[in-house]
Structure formats: structure tokens, C-alpha cells
Length: 162
Image 1 (cartoon, rainbow, N blue to C red):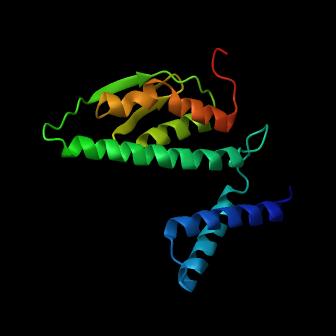
Image 2 (image 1 turned 90 degrees about the horizontal axis):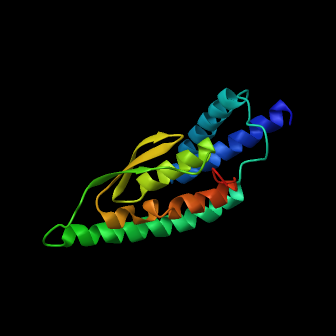
């Protein structure tokens, strides 16, 4: 793809993200967003794109609603913990060995865990994630591989050792 179409495509993509994040539609915000999006696209233009197949946008957009449901479920679980008279928390650090080898998949896994109330990804390496969980119920979907399984579907990469 030549430089100008790539620049325009990146500018529009960044601008759409800007509009979702800002959530306002004043002329000032629209123009500022367009200017910032163009600047980021210009800086990012000559960064080498990863070789291979294109980024799986469709699969990612299918993943997001599932993640929103998980965040809501976890938020309700946290509410029950907080409102319980005995505050039955059992904080723990969980070392999790991911099968994912795609760096973007690992980042998505770590961010998804951190977005879910009651859990935080404290450290990510290619061989291990250290996850803090407020109790065993919060850690369940991480330990049993539910999050990683969903993210593997997004990136459609073969699992490590498979």
C-alpha cells in the first residue's frame, strides 16, 4: 500500500478510537482529534508492520462483548464480597503459564485480566503471568484457562506444545 492511503487509513482508524474515548462531538474536539490522529499516524507510518496475516479485527470485536459480560459478572462478585459482613477475601498471587506465544495475545490476556474487577496482572513474561486475585472465585476463569482460550480464538494461533 502506498504512503498516502496508509496515512489516511491510519488517521481515520486513530480518529475513530479518539471519538470513542473522548465521547464528545464538539467542533473543537473533532478537529483536535483529527489533528492528533494525523500526527500519531504520521509518526507511526514508517514503523514496520508485522509480516504475515492481517490483524484479526473481526475476532477481536467478537471478543469484546464476551469480555464486557465477564467484567460485569466479576463486578457483581466483587460487590457481594464487599457487602458481605465478614468480607471473605483471600488475596493470592497466581503464577499462570500461558500457552499463547503471540506477544499481542499475551498483552490482551494481561489487560483483560486487569480489566476484570478483583484481578490484576502484576507481571507478564513470555513464560508466565503473575496475577493478583482478591479470592479464589475471582481467579477461577484465569486458572482454568477460560480467558486464554477466548484470546486464542481471537489470534487463532496454535497453542504452545500443540
